[in-house]
Image: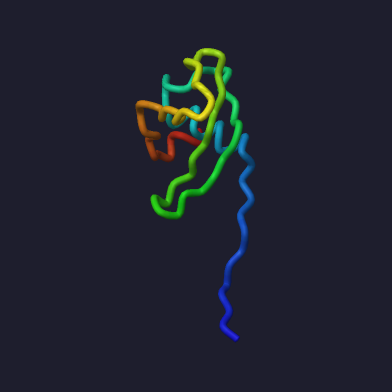
Length: 79
């Protein structure tokens, strides 16, 4: 039997949202809240869908727009 030495690291959606708010400086409104998160294995990214009263309305069935600016990966994000 083949085995791996692995463990699951559970990260709440709220933690991911806080990291995103800090990483995407001035791109997410202060009232942004996480609606859903999902992992995309093709791109090795997490898709985090956030809601804010400041965002434009998205019609049902339409593609959800992306944040214009990509997150900045830096140790400063977690300070």
